[in-house]
Length: 100
Image (tube, rainbow, N blue to C red; front, side):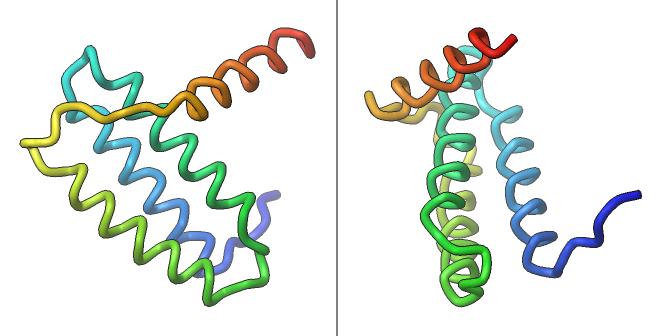
């Protein structure tokens, strides 16, 4: 039995799926960087806003769509990964290996 999702939840998931599809269109060498960029941004944005703050979520969706349109351009072939993103990824992988 699955829980029904609200319209806003469906929009967020659709944006995330679209971002993951965008990653597959990028050169193979840069795909891991784009994937980290997408995962990090969705995670940090989701944890920075209350699930009940509809206006903030709608704002983030609009901003995310605009940003994704920019990254979907074929001329964008690479992205920059900050040290914070790398640290976040290491922390996530480290917590997985210790809990397994």
